[in-house]
Image (cartoon, rainbow, N blue to C red; front, side, top):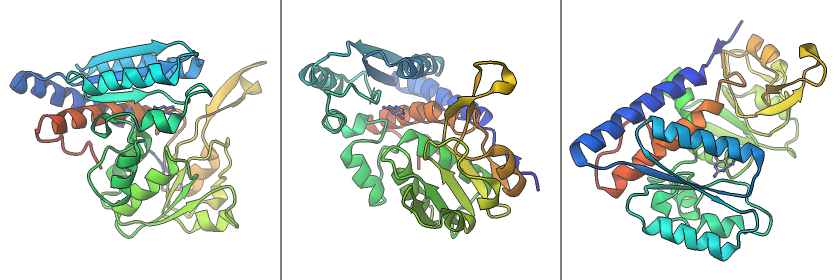
Length: 300
Ligand code: GUN
């Protein structure tokens, strides 16, 4: 069997179009422009790339984009003051503080200072609790993107067995909650899981989010299963020339595609969905803040 390739690039473009349509309606009918503020502390090169991309896509869908770039030695008090300012700004509906923060800043303290209604990352402890208890919340972007891809492929996920490999707060845990919310039977596997191969092999849905290049081989995958690969790992690629590298996922694409029914590639799978879902969350937050109907299909 050769798996269906789930094209996250195409799907993310559709999500952005849907967001752009909703933004246009908010402007035309209510004179409201959704606003997203992104805060970057320091000069981590990967974070700078992400933040630039977020700003560009925010503007492309018609929303207001505000970027705050702070020095690496910014104090916690200064950062908290900026967040308080953004919390109070009615033209800002979403606030994202790019992680990781420099070591002297307490990430939990900073994230929990964001107004939960503007927490478009879904990392605030209130949103984590709301998601865990099946209540309306802001949902972390990467797991939301994975859920959208799975729903699109399967229709209903009810009764399917799902294994999430990885237990991070950003992906693994919220992913498991979302799958449970869609009535999957969910297992969270991690680095201490015994007989990981056997655990993965009984799953109809595998979400790999561990950050280890190509660690899941095709013979771990149940025939016909859906494989969602969240990993983005850079490895050496001597076949492309000396010193060259390429991106791979946490799953070995070629062998997994032989067994799976559907699989996301890396790059071009889950990756593009994350920013698309950030835009979706911002428009959702804007609608909620103004007591308006939320766009359908863009939330969990
Ligand atoms: N750094 C890597 N991924 C993310 C994300 O989804 N949100 C934030 N705030 N920082 C990140």
